[in-house]
Image 1 (tube, rainbow, N blue to C red):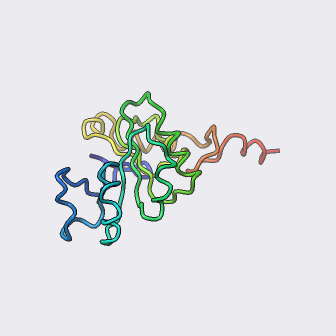
Image 2 (spheres, rainbow, N blue to C red):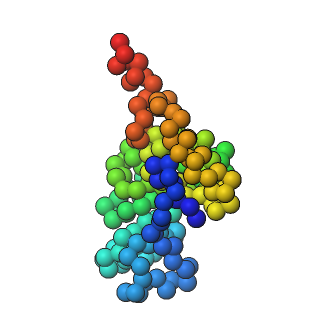
Length: 170
């Protein structure tokens, strides 16, 4: 699945292992992106084995439940089942306010028009399907990255917010 970073399509070196549990051995990849249930079951052992861990969560997970793991998590991927479901943005904002510093990824049904909002809420990357990448090629995401110079809310991306810009202009 294509990964968008800074408006460009990028490679993804995180591995989603098979759900059969074969990833627990020493030959498993160093960067594992696990479903929440597998992460909770095997995460401590994998972290002790020196693996870099990521977790994929649904958009109804309480971000506070991940806070104890922040020191061991290098990636949190928040699922967006529909482009019209904005709960993932709230989760991203909450994770950043709780102090999560690792990579934050939006995965699923986002469209290029939502890219600036995703970035301003704290997402570093967006992962979309191959079919969506064909409908919205890299040029669309790059244009979306550059289309907005200000955000409505105070965020975590590179965009300044409108209120700060107004105060600066005085």
